[in-house]
Picture 1 (cartoon, helix red, strand yellow):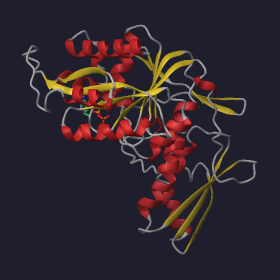
Picture 2 (picture 1 turned 60 degrees about the horizontal axis):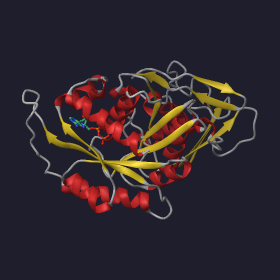
Picture 3 (picture 1 turned 180 degrees about the vertical axis):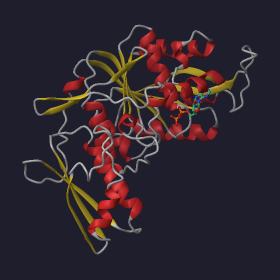
Length: 352
Ligand code: ADP
């Protein structure tokens, strides 16, 4: 692996805020070292806390991992122009941008595919319909879905410098302020995030955003219960969590992990309730019928077992899936599925 070869790989890393020019052409690659299966790249940034710094570091690592022989060790250092080299961009982010946010709530699930993002987006939309000021930070680094579910894909949030700090503006649609790592990554660009890198990118997506005055900031957390969750809960002043599950036993077994994580001594945050998604199936042409295809009342039993309220039951209906795919959340409608999300929003607001 010589430098020229590695430099070619780095041309795959495009800067989304600079007309998709690659980091080599932009002169951001300060040095490349390669010896004995170790590659060290140093990237140069022109300002403190570039909101895309973590994303570009991650993408640089990913480009090398994709192209280099398996087992190659990759390190990416950064320097700020005119400053002494340091290992990581400054991420001593404070909570200033959250100063006017009343409730910060994590939306979590024990496993993926249970509809956590669908519930997050619709809950945010429903809260806004009820007149609350709402923001949603899509912290699902492994599969950011907010851009698609709100049809804001391809939009680029504004960013500006304020003193020594870079501030990112959320996008606004359906009365909700949205932020997602998906706005900074192309859909086809596989995000290979690892622990600390993912955590830093997430922190930026929450702490560097000018949320302004909000009643609720929902955080769509990554699925599962790994290290990234624990560190997210430590780094963000979460007030508590809502857990989403489907009624099958396998999904409910994962709820137990989620509950234990929030109740773990080192995390110790309240769980405001459980949302049972896909609670039953209702065909569009027979709106009064209910088929319990994933089992009946699993969510109710689980909520009782753990002493947490069941905040709501959301049916499986085609329009909810279509709303996700078309970017018009079902919660905007006054159909039964839309009203189910309104009821959920009312319940959550009443508990808080
Ligand atoms: P997660 O965030 O838990 O991975 P998603 O919210 O992405 O799950 O949902 C997975 C898929 O299931 C999506 O295609 C979504 O549209 C669909 N879906 C989620 N909830 C429902 C529902 N209640 N009715 C119909 N489809 C749903």
